[in-house]
Length: 429
Image 1 (cartoon, rainbow, N blue to C red):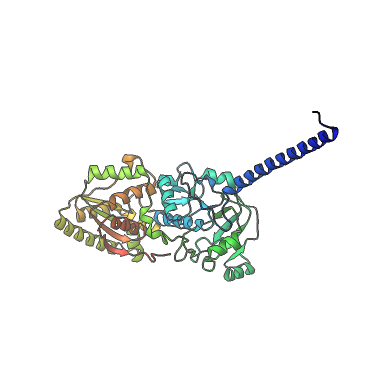
Image 2: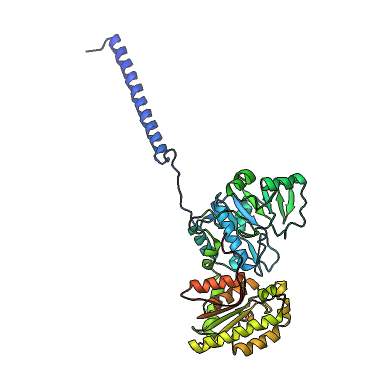
């Protein structure tokens, strides 16, 4: 039976309607799935999407601190680097790995004898430790240059109390007033050059007034990515006073002994000790810098200190049976660069002969045997040998001996013996 014209038209309309409905349903289903997929991995409003830092991928960093000078030698410079990493963490910044030469740290390469911080430390392991302390990480020069391209948004000039870096700085009365009131003031010139970098803005900081990291980031830096310090001397007396934003390591002094040394330097120390000293020996370090500095460069007082050393070492040898002695001093040809040591260095042959009578036969490290010439590298080898001794005698005190004492005493139930010892003025930040 054939359908009438009216029936065929009605059937055609129904087919079209059902087709439209079917297509609409399919589109709705597809849209629904798309929406579901887009929201499935979206965090709930108000929740933070926490991620774990990959220690091998610091290349994600886009905000940086670079310090062009750390103002001190090895021990203090290392502590200052640790505090800069801690401060950097507040705004998720990374610290550019410094260059090093003869115990000093720099932001740029001085010459062909300049190396990176890897000359002194195991940087991969150091970054792991910084992450565990909740400090900011170190990033390499190439990654920093990729983002900053030889240009700094802000160069910070810290006007420290001792004024060692302030002699060439000229400020107006209004700028000085701002420094006293707010702790910072902008420089008058822009697009200057410093150490080969183009500087968009220079800002002067009074570290005695500006002590808030929030104020530093919100009011001074304002999100700037590439930030340099003309000189960064860390945190402490006559330095900066920013809080350490870490709950795991509130002070760099508490973690300094954990800084991992370059493995080649550790190997040199181990091979020397094994070959020349054995497992049981007495360590002696003499820091004439502070003995002379604290007593008007009196060589007479220095000899009195060395006499005390000789007597106490002799008593220890008799009590313990230890015979081998390792000696390191700051007046050797690769010792301290301090002006105060000059008198002891000029009389080094006489002092060495005198120590031979006081201590008897003793061993010293000759860096020429392993082709070391950098003072910082040599200091780390000697520190490693000294801190591994069974007994440690320290004459003089100061930052380097404090680091040595800390490392020696952390290694076991050991107490270093101190003679004519200058304690550090502060042990906290």
